Length: 506
Image (cartoon, rainbow, N blue to C red):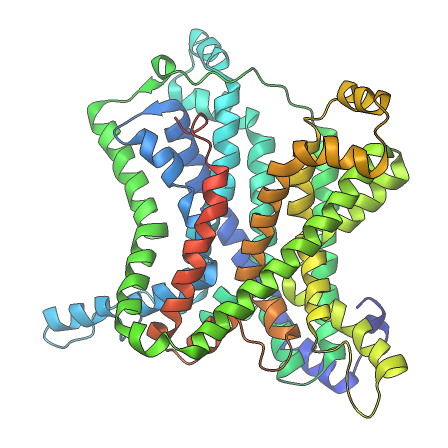
């Protein structure tokens, strides 16, 4: 992709630079800023309420507010449009109540609508990390602040919030990456960003070179963000107390504030999870007879097969990296492991272009026999893109599990003569079994939900549930997209439940 910057297609790039690029930069920038602000507000506020305060339903909302993670943003997007668009039930009801007159209603197909839905879909990233930060702070710092005359509000802004800054920043960095990578939601809202422009340039203008140039600009911005975040984290050091979240030390809100807190949490939970799932169930019940056929079974089979193959390959690669890093903890190994796991920060559209270009070159140089393409449009190409995209979450899961194996356990196993495969089968595998299953489940669900890589690199006719959703939502057929979306949501709940540990959400 970087080489394509030096070989531009003059006419197409001139058109993009004059008429497309300014709007792309503006839309992408405002989208990121809006989603960051929305997720920071929702995530931090809900984390503070559930971690520090006492109000009705706190225990339930502590874990229930994580459930919107199971709903892909593109699913929440088409549900929102189906409900709030001009022909949706809400505006139709308003016209009926006003005698057919069209009352003003904020347009849902807009940048503001995309910001709202992405904020409701992505706030759990900030909520999970911020809540953990507030729990680990303990109550001593706040009590010390109150002894110096600080009110609760001042204690939050001057003590708790600055102490939680690294956790909140990490969550917001994930939000930024997910927002830049989003393709399905912004395409449904008709908001042109870099992700949608890369797809349209490739499949609309039929210019892989111009798409690669757009992808290189987005990749450059992401790399700057990643290195800036790492530099910022190295410059700051934070320390915290052990967790102290006993119910007796929670802030006792006033009766009125308790119910306000409960209502706030309930509205966010309903907007992010209950309403979308309810609407999907309603649409699915109407279209179940027509959709549940042999073709739908093919979508499910393709999705399960592709996700299983990708999960196995990614977990195997992550396992090799984890064991290699364990045995060789020098800086070259750490550098190459970090480089290998950087793909999660790169949007799917960028990876699709980056994987397709060398595959096309190899096809032309070595495998282009009688016009047949061996690599382009193959499952191998898709799996390579998935490997680059989802190696990081699998590696992080296995690396956390590997930390539980102490040096003494390894030395004892080697003292018993265990080496090579026997060491892996007798020590590593039993200790890593839970991490392997967790990593495989995370990758399986991520691949199942992935839209741009699948859409841009799949073999002809190899449609999955995500591709089916894209095709139906592109035509405005919300009811036909509901059943595959509901299947993705149900399976997507599995890794969310893995994240919910009862002791941490009590």
